[in-house]
Length: 400
Image (cartoon, rainbow, N blue to C red; front, top):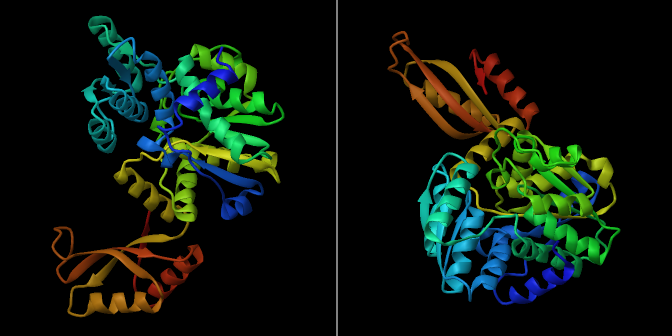
């Protein structure tokens, strides 16, 4: 079992390696949730996530034993191992799934890691990395089920307590369980009255199911935008620790994750990945349980693919009445498009995109089709625009 002393030792090892990330109060999220919300911004950490903490602590303990390590990761652990190996003069091989985001692969290369792409999921990559371990003799660095890794991740908990003595609840994203295991030990040993909550995606709920069944449950698949916590099976060590120190594990759906990611982007101006947003999603799902409580949410990482972020933002704006997509017919005569855009300007609708089609084979001669995306203030504003267009003789079709 990992001890508080192990975490404190890791804290000393990491002192001049990692960033002591800020714990910031959020007025807007506190007002929205009814809790006093503080965000532990590990998305600002070196490599863009907390993973460097556990990776460096583990490799530091191996520095006199081996010079070559191998690991499996969907991205963040790979970056942590690659940077830690570089800082300690070691060589690293990182096995990643074929579909890993390009930004994460580039980051690993920039830190000096050798990338091997294998399989479609983390579990495929994990199995191949263990095979390389057997064949090459390189030391395998587990992403979560390892005492030194857990101790390194636990330093996040030490920093929370040091910054926020009156914290009452800590909310932690959960994949394999390394982060919540280390954090739970740190905060519970320093103040057993602090409640520790884990949050998983409903698409990857191994810890949630395991805590319910009181035995490790492996899920058949992992379907979630929170790829950093898309793990089929939690660790043996992490489960044992969670049973002892974690108060509850929640699950959130994909809509909740997307909405929380959008809130953090728009309200706090911070870039987070899906896994980094699940803590806020858990808080918003269970507002009554945290009302007026001092809550620290760990924003575990910010390594999101920029194209995915753009899609999530657009989907969120559509859901919240901030974007309106329309299709409507126009007479194919000079000035008709100008008349439409002038009308939309009078309605205070900002045109984001417009596509004017005169040549499709299904269009009658003398007609055109316009597909248009508008920036709007609310659903009420959208209804005003539709009413105005219909009143002027148009037949707009709202597109999802």
